[in-house]
Length: 122
Image 1 (tube, rainbow, N blue to C red):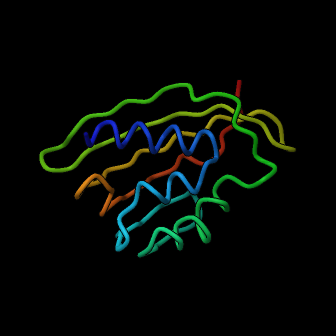
Image 2 (tube, rainbow, N blue to C red):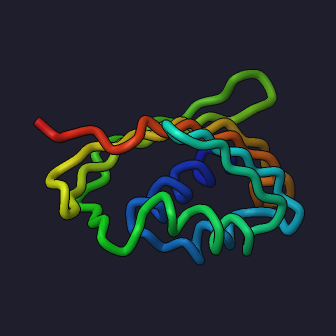
């Protein structure tokens, strides 16, 4: 179940379906994210959706393809890695995120996300 949850989160991110991402989170989620220039924190799905995800992937950022999704576990934590290809006004890019999370009653209740940032696509 947990690896499916990680895959669903990756697919929702690639679709920029932030409401679906929020629906995968527990009401008291402990969310931390690290992007190249900032640390992000949130404690509710609405905070994650409204204050973080839409800033990570802005309206002008178009995701063309979910290139890869890998899931696994590290002891009592689940892991999902996903890479996306897209484009925006700066040109084509690739971006990868690594997430470690725990699941409780079918929802992510603790998650740490590390983002590569948008890298120029070859």
